[in-house]
Length: 352
Ligand code: SF4
Image: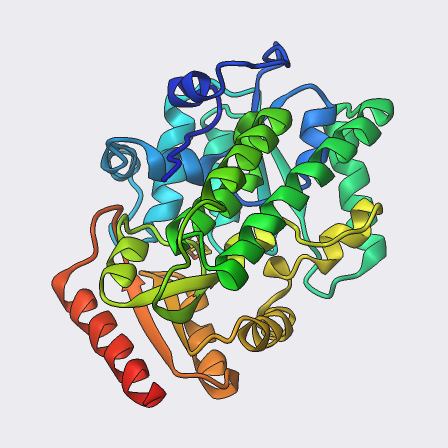
């Protein structure tokens, strides 16, 4: 499996040996969830999804400990604490905080960051998907970052090429069945910052596609994964070890913006994740049918408000759902393993 890390990380630099673009000297712009990446690249910064840095660190627990030492409560989502810990450790030119359309904790996070002297740049996805409001937000962000319009169209061309490779990887996962659920997750989730270098990411994706096409078709009950990306480390591997194959990663696929439109506002309006459960349901229903999904794993993060959405998902999704909860960045516990195993056995039983 390709295990890449981002944002000036030495692992990335080793993998991307043939860098054609010189690293930016304007610095890194971190962000708390997917934002219009195009604007950051076109402004000459290196984009960095802070979630990915936190969860791929060899010792992610230290970021959580740092946040708790600084007074963050134990009874709080560990993604937020991890993001805070990463920001406290890394030099950044600024952090884009998504105030609407992501997490109910972001406002308080932005406040403490500002208090600590970090340059925070607020950005919002309007809950009602109002195009005028989103246009205003994008224009505000362009101004704040001093995005260069001429570079923007060049960057958009490059990002479109990258996203089309990611769509190919995603399609291979369910149609050719030669990409694992974990690989699908990694390629899509890291599209939020493309590891800071679009062309290198595209090249690495092409290489991966070529290698995956030489594999045998995978067996396993086709499953969907919905909810925020997992903080736990071995979920996909475990699912595959007991006879499942995740062929759809809902949120991660959304991060890769699988929509072909030249208009940036339209692109980020089609993106479902920030606009609530009803915007997501249509996408989930379509993909469950198209991919022949037989069961859904709904991942919820401990202390996350999104767990409430489980009620609606259970009543509307036409296939069986198993809800699993994660808390810390470590391997899944025995109880969760047993529940997943029993769920897949039940689905296998239904097949016959
Ligand atoms: S898992 Fe939930 S509470 Fe945690 S950062 Fe994500 S949206 Fe916020």
